[in-house]
Structures are given as C-alpha cells and as structure tokens.
Image (cartoon, rainbow, N blue to C red; front, side, top):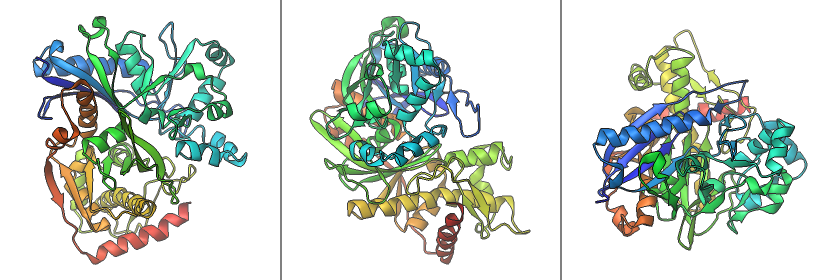
Length: 491
C-alpha cells in the first residue's frame, strides 16, 4: 500500500524531509543544517553538493525513523528556497560556482544599471518582479560573466541552470530530468507569467543562453521518477513549488483575498488574487501562486529579507541569547520595548521600499536599555514589517482581509504572534501543523498522483491550533509612530 507522501523541504539553512500520511499528519521529520558561506560583504553562498548530500541524508533518515519502506511512498513533492541559483556541468554534474543565495546582494549594481537604461517596466510588466538582486536572472548572468570559460560552456550547451528544486530533481533522477515548476520559474526575471513561457526578450537583455533553462511544469503534475539507484525504488515526483507558494497552498489559502505569512529566515506574506494577476501600485510583487491543470492562480507577495535571521543575529553576533528559542522569554522580561525601534535592514529592505543599500539600526537607546528591550524590539520589527506589507496589499487588491494565517518556525513564538495581532488589529490564526510549506507541496504531489481526490478533501485536513485576538494598548500607537518616523532616516 502507498500510505505516505514524502515532502522534500530544501530551505535556506537546512535540508528537511517530512513524511505525511493520508490524514495530513506529520509521521516523521528529519533535518540537517548546511554551511552558510559569506565570501564578501553582502554575498551569501551555499555548496550545492552539500545541499544534495544533506537532502539525501534527510530523505533516508526520515524513512528509517518512521520505520517504513521506500515502496510505501506514493509520491514525492519538492519545495525549496526560491531564487537561489545553481549552474552546473551536465556531463560531470559538478557546479561551476557555488549556489548564489536569494539573500545575496552582489548584483545590486547590475540591477541599478538596468533600471537606469530603462528596462524596469519591461521586466516588471512581463514577470511581476522588480529589477532587484533578490531574483535569479542577474545571479545567472553574474556566474556566466565571472569566467569566460563558463560563458563559453554555457553557449555550447554544456551547462544547466536551476533553482534548488531543479538541482534536486536532476540528482534524484540521475541526470535524466532537467525541470522546474512555474512558481519557481516565475522568480527568475526570465519567465513571462502571463503567457507562461521563458521570455526571449528578457533572456536576450541578460544575455543568458536559453538552452541552459529547465523545462517548466505545473505545480501539481507528474514530472518523472526517481532513479532506483538513488532511493532503491522508482518513486514519482508529482509536486514542485517554491516555498512560499507551497505554504500558501498548505494553509489552504485557495480563495481570492486569503492571506498567509511565513516567518522563516525572512518573512513572506502572500495574498491569493485568484485567476487575476493584479498589478501592484504599491511595490508588491505579482507572482504565480500555482498552476493545476488549466487553471493558473496568481498572488501578491511582499518580501521581508530578514525576520528569523534577526533572532539568529542576536544569538550569533550580539550573543544576547544562546538559543533562538530563548528570545520569547527574554522579550517577556520587560513590559515593553522601552522606546527602542529595531530597523531590521540587515540585507537591504524588501517590499515596499526595495532599497538594496539600506542598513539596519537600533534607535532610541538610553542608559536604561536592557537586553530584553532589544529582544522585544526585534520581535516588533518582524511584526511591523509584515504590517506594512499587508496594508499595501489591501490597497492593491481592494480586499480587506479578515484574518492572517501564519506558519514557519517563528510562528510558534506566542509573544510575536500576539504582537502581530495587536499591530494589525486583526485575528492571527496558527494551524496545528506549522510545517505548512512541506504540507503544501505534499498536497500538490498527492493531488497529482490521486493520493487525495480533490482540494475539498485536502481542505478537511487543515486544523487550527490557536487564534490570537488583538488587544488594544496605547503602546501599539507609539510603536507604529516611532517606526514610521525612524525608518525614514535609513532610506
């Protein structure tokens, strides 16, 4: 019997594998961190070989810990850190350069020059994206331009490009399948989200050989099978989606106006806009939410580059906590943030500012400032950045959302969720299973394979854990006022 779906969750800091049963219950999870490489200021890289090795280890470990066999797995879904860029040799299988991570800012100047040359509207109208170092297109160009031999190999058809999903599919199928899905393709600056194809004009502007680009599939579609030599069995790969789109689906935000926010390394807020690709007037991104069969769903997205990473920074650089989980109790050690505002621009500012050169700041410090004040201000910063994005999304869509569904590791922080509810003045809903990214891609895979028969069946699986109700507090207005005044000083 095929009793399980295997979800591969290839994150920014770790490789995870999660097994789900037919009730959507998490049967087992395995996770291995991999190295974060910082060669220069604002550069962030990963070793693609290490990502593959840790992911394979996680897959084998989760099956072993669940005491199941690979032949009991119905299908595989893959979700991944989006925009992270790998270019490799299709004969040797070796990357020609480290993976350039979505957080990396090395191509900011390249993007500025493209904007100066009048290319902003061309890219935005076709992709729904801004010309920003965040996205894959300029990262590909940078790798190809970094060495004339690399450029030559690409033009001769010897190299392949992929985001992490593509890299994993290629390895799982032993070099047989070079594929991605439309959600990941839509984040490259090269894919036209309206006609659903790689765009010749955009490819030409960035001087990227089309032959290195993968074939694009639906989010819920059988792509191929794993090589038996890799996992011991031929298992169909039936679902692929970028992590935020997977989380949107995992939260069952399937109706226009539904909103979710994922609190991970960054914060990624998405609103389902249905069949309509809403063009933002407020610096939100328009992106593909998913494609199932003939129907493409679109979404508005606001990206905060630093969220959970802010807590990691307090742990690793300031050493005010030993473990990320300690942040809640430290923040609770004070009644409020003591007038502190933590501007969380450690990797520039994403939506709605899109300022690559912005730096972080801690403002309002006095001799009375304690570690607890800084910790609480950090949580407020995460909530304030989310608040800004949702306000702009509402303006674009013309829809006032009723509640915010939340997921991701930091959504387990009850104080952060209550602060979020207070500052938004709306209910914040956390599901029983906060691993909604993995669950979402499991749903995509299971719908394609027939493991689940319909979206309605999948809807019945989703359950609430806790709902946070806003509390009126005069301090809320002070927090917002300080933020709005102080963030102007760093732009």
